[in-house]
Image (tube, rainbow, N blue to C red; front, side, top):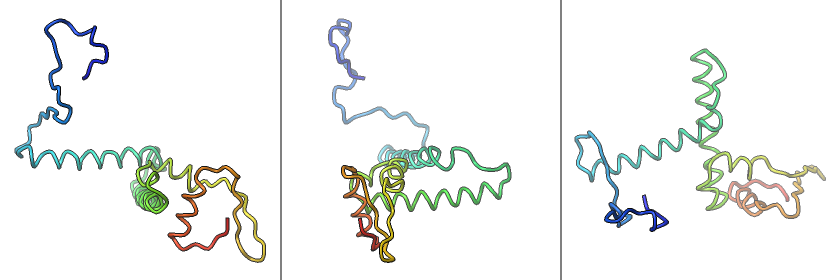
Length: 147
């Protein structure tokens, strides 16, 4: 931990690790550090996916029955993967965003739907921040909706 106020540091005590690219790892693993560190990073990535899912569809499983919850988990995984794919297709910002952010910006679209001449036209607010990302997503997926 870096102290931002050097006046609070007791005399004779300095930083333990002055170089920020090094960190301490304690493990009971039989692997050497070069093998254990990538496994730790992969585990951290999986934990982020779990946290993202628990923030949305897996917050409250719908039933006390195993089969209903298994079906819910399958649908949650499909929805998660489709949402992440849409985020990657929309923009670099949405490629790194949480699924809740992608849902708020690109799925829950603040548009008025009009149907002139058997076409679907979306009327967005004039200063909608994510209009460009939404149209990029439409163009990439090959949808033919006018905005």
